[in-house]
Amino acid sequence: MVKSTVIIYRITNGEATIANCGNLISGDVTIPSTLGGCPATKIGWYAFYDCSLLKSVTIPNNVTSIGSEAFYTLTIV
Image 1 (cartoon, one colour):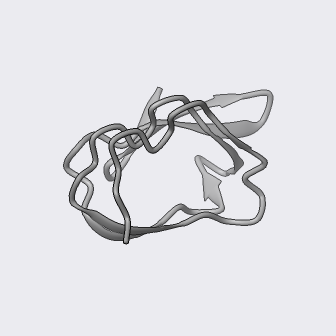
Image 2 (cartoon, rainbow, N blue to C red; image 1 turned 30 degrees about the vertical axis):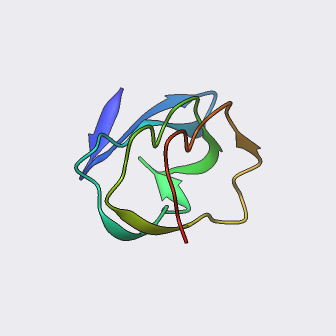
Image 3 (cartoon, rainbow, N blue to C red; image 1 turned 120 degrees about the vertical axis):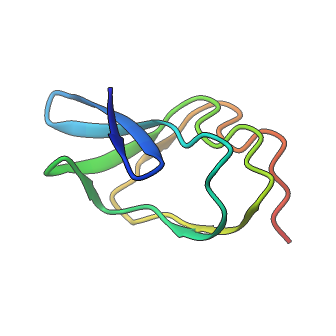
């Protein structure tokens, strides 16, 4: 696992998976298209769990998989 600002991710087979963002992340968030020099292709299970301070999340086109309940308890209006 590697931490980038508040995004925690892992790299497997040259692709980055967002594992967790902690509940400190807030405001408008843009997921970077690369993490650790690898394309961010997955958002893991519960990655944004209980991130109640988020206003919006922009997901890059190269993300092809979003895990179960990745945005659990998140309400974006």
